Amino acid sequence: MTLPYANILAILDRLSLTPYDVLVDVGSGKGRLVCCAARFPLRKVIGIEHFSELCAAARRNADRMRKKKAPITIVHTDAEEFDYRQATVFYFYNPFGPPRLNRVLMRVKASLDAAKRPVRLAFANAEHDASFRACSWLEQYDYWDPSRSSSVAVPVSFWRSI
Image (tube, rainbow, N blue to C red; front, side):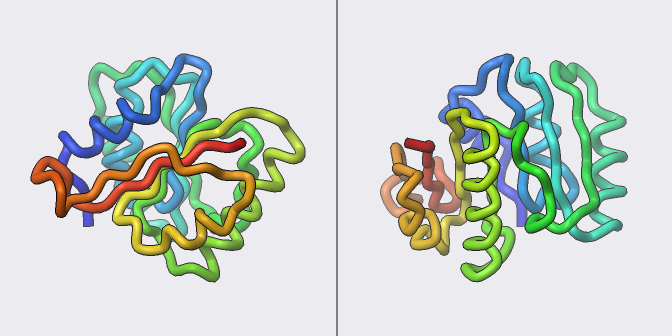
């Protein structure tokens, strides 16, 4: 499932992206978020996807993109294996359930221990916010509730490292 472009752009705006950021889309699918993010002046945009067919589609979409301001890399790997040390911004569209999400968040935390830096995370279709709340190294700084706003398609929670 994908989000409307207006929601994606609003999420990217709320993440306060800078030219120094490296955005990682965990479970990037065909690359809609990755391509939208590349229209911002970022250092780099990375899509991580487990399924090779989706990676191929994301690469085709990225190659066809116009008005790109940031380089795009699509990586065919398991989210639990990726090296997150260069990432400063993370996007999750409910890519998997709590056990795997917990392991990926522990991997992100380990990357912070290895390379100190502030990070921001957006969790769209936020069904498993408990996994984020359980991370003592994160604080929630915003939450979009679709029941309170017709302009939001799914719940979105925003987090930052503390």
